Image (cartoon, rainbow, N blue to C red; front, side, top):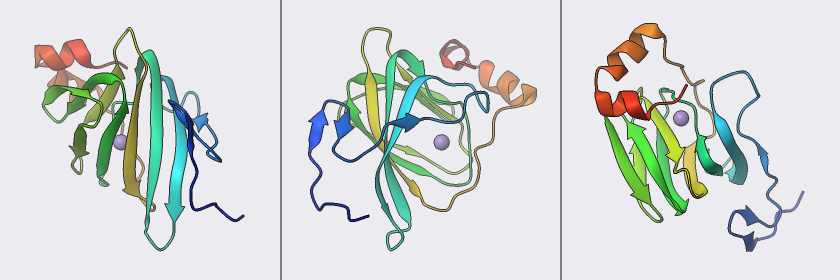
Length: 149
Ligand code: MN
């Protein structure tokens, strides 16, 4: 398949030729109201650029892994847990998730929330928190209030 050099953005959350896909297979991990599009995939770059979008109240999986993420907020505003802190983020902010660091993105209750995420094309599978991990995370009241499972 030939991919056109320019693929216009067709609305606030779609690009020409990019299929909106499930975030993950249902039942494999906790998440809510979030979709995924792969915007760039090129073996020569060894990375992928994806766009994730959550509906109001949606959230990504609380997870960690060896690979890192470089994220640019593209649409709206939300909150993100990275490691031991919950941050407010809005359009054009940059977020880095380091290796083996717990992270979760959450939309606000009143608006969609979208972000671009660059990631290694070849990467390890996300780890989900076990009971001990959740207990440690929940010792911080701000994190306890934030995380969704
Ligand atoms: Mn991740």
